[in-house]
Length: 533
Image (cartoon, rainbow, N blue to C red; front, side, top):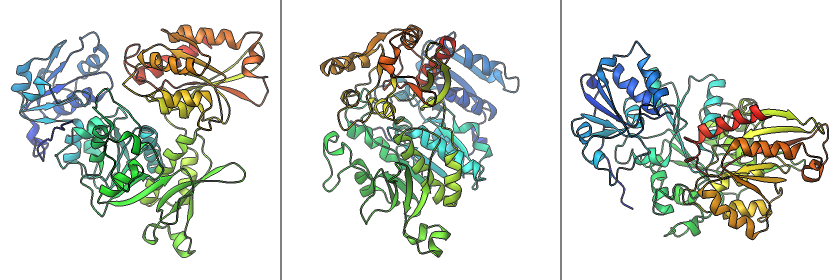
């Protein structure tokens, strides 16, 4: 796969240079990114054309938000909706590209003289220290925990990027003392290739698994974009990487000799100081953070760092290791590794370990990531049902992890649209293979092309499921009937006063088709649950 390389630098030399320039925003959307770009460039005096293949009716919430703002110079704004026109790209001084649009083969982008993104503009003009996070699983939870931790510790911190907040909304509030935490998708990183704009003080790459294989030709091409997060770091920066074995040797078309996982590959390339994270006690040469299970069954996070990076307490007491994470409010083994990485970032930012433990122990998580949002007591047997929304689980491995996050069996609602991924890991987990501890009490399937790939794997293993359903409302109605049936105790076990049954919506698929995006999907799930239960 050939990657497009952008010229170094920025179209605009200063913010004042924007005034009077013709800027085309490609993609208005409904998630805030396009709207933030429109507002930013209007505010700075640009003549803005918004072009989107969606209709005015489809974009009505965003258009109404912009048009109702009397502070904006709306006379400098023009909408071209339901189509793209080549002249809007040819005649623009700058095109602001949507990361979800490929440059390769796009005649409109090819006609543009200069292309930027909200991320590239932000990085060019901010003086803030950047903490950047990418990966396949856990990005949003990790950046949210980092930002929560920094703010609670007293920093004036900002959070943006792929988490649906454009950093242009807070650019002019940043300076050299305000850390900015950016979640960066592979597409957003690809739009930075060649620009020399991203040099994070701390870069984190979360777990790498196959994703977006309907976009990339292979895993190596996908990972090539992830590598851009550390491409311009130097010895004064930090790169935090996975230290556990994964499917690198299987997934890569040309594994690098001596590397057993994606983290090893990244570590061999980054010029920054390398720190690793692990789910188990590592070997003696390890430097970073790891999880240690205690005889009581609890898990704690341990930091093993060089003298230069140790806390004052560890230095004065000659400690080789130090606890950095304890009990958490949020459920799930995979969430613990996200919080552990956040703990390490906070430590590198100067927060004391005991303060980190206290702060992140109280973190409640974020919407759409194992979000606890509703409780219902069944009138038949007084069983407590707690509902969790994990709509941002868009790969099968994430749904598999969600099913194992509660130290008990759950009712799992999964399925959706495929993006050329392998559903075997999810099927194996639901069957109890690979040392899986908890097999779901029931499985409900939402319809979609991903579900069509999962069903034969379930049938092959004789795994029972209900569905697939074309409607969340119908699915939840049937679930409620099952929970209230006379045979409920045979399916779910006896109801006990101090126990609860988790109902977990973790699709493991993308959302397109039935929903606008994963956030729309999660919100609709929550609305339906609250209406039905």
